[in-house]
Image (cartoon, rainbow, N blue to C red):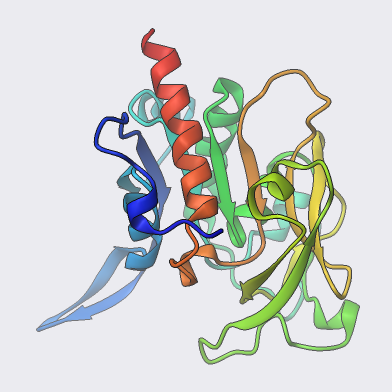
Length: 258
């Protein structure tokens, strides 16, 4: 059963801090028309309704020390959706349909993610976030899915999400969270091609497109690391994925202060 906001994050529970990546874009408000850090409210509402404390992490100059200082202060990390990952990150030339690289955001998110993986901090990747996870671990992407599967259902355009039935792989973390199948809100023209090191596929859609990946459970360690190609923030009547990363972050926060 899907969790509602009243089902999670009880008053006696530790409320973990969840860092959420944001992106820069032009924003107009009143007389102002400026570059601003941006993230739709539904993302951090998913975290807060699941019992976490959302902290927004805008792109900025980064090195290993800065990434570590940020991660000293958060208990979980959500890499959010957005434009395409720079194909140079996985050794390819840009496809004509691929977005112009957001190099500042790429550098910021890759540094945060790589530091989080070293520390065992829980990670949830959403859409682009799943692609960042795969790429950071040495995988590649299909740069334009219509070239592979022959249709544009995964990204209808005009901010209209397509609904896909995703089928989980038995025995995976994701299957334990959402069951055998779930309807997913999709808005992506890229997808995972070659898997990154240490990842396994945890869901595909009816076209065979990889819709979720996670760390191989047979490898050492038990960190929560999950990337989904769809947008769980678009259906907040179902908080299972947000609840899962918040709970993993709560456990991480408790263990590191004990």
